Length: 380
Image 1 (cartoon, rainbow, N blue to C red):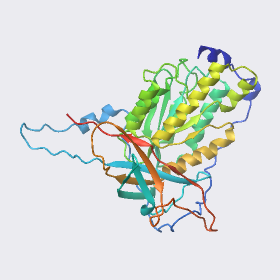
Image 2 (image 1 turned 60 degrees about the horizontal axis):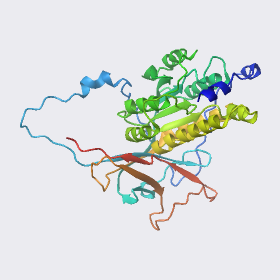
Image 3 (image 1 turned 90 degrees about the vertical axis):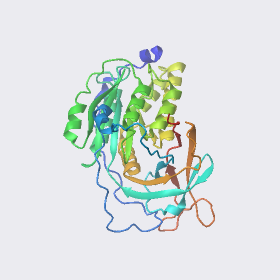
Image 4 (image 1 turned 60 degrees about the vertical axis):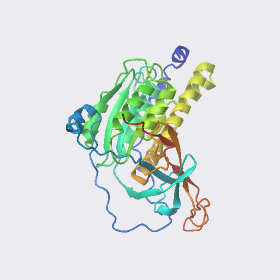
């Protein structure tokens, strides 16, 4: 890691004179034609519910249970329920709407499950923007400094007035710059604090786990948008512990990897040694794993022009979702990790569902859902 720090020098000044990217577009306005049924008219959008603050201590008093007299009868629900947010997108990243409930099939550890609740709709997003802001790479007026701010401000520009957003920056430890709010002026004031990075540490594992666990109790569509190099230098948690705790939290992670073009530029000129190259490859793999196992997506842009498409794909996946709920056949509270697989099938034949557009052409699609969950442990 120390060798890597010495090799990543400031980029030539000419790169810093690049014009600030134009305001990102909101993506294609027309909905995809690959539908199964026509949408119902007059459908009302869900009213946004304000999420609880990141600082969970604020609401501890509200969550405290009243004192129960000794010997009084109590009720405890023993039935487990699992909620799986699902997005079905085509090969352009556009959401495919109006797929009937009977086309979905959920397998838990390869055992089919009965879907007890099914919803589809568009709703506001609740997003926490987690930004790597470390002296490791974000030195003042370097290329990565510029790219980080471009990605962060560009994503904020795509949010709608009813969307909730919080901002967390991390180096040695995560710092909450602003809690969840719909006031974009407050968010931009918080972003003004990102000027000069302090510590040359990038504790990704601690930061993303801390944020995910704070968001675990938020209802509705929620996600973490992670803007990071993917490298971790000094976290208290290791990679395996981070994966398990992210699976428990159940918050989708949409990761945007930094420095893709810059790394190739240095590598082509022999400035990256084999250890630094391996560190970066491992960092990309970590971000892909976090995104896949939590039901999100990972992006690794090489050009600034890719940002608008990335932001549109994130918005499509978060605003438009199918929400499936089921009671697993395995009701054991053993703390084990159980794999989930969501499929689209033809209910008549059980074969993979074929989706076509208005011209009758087959549409390639991808199902985005979390890969599993961890069962609760017995309550003592």
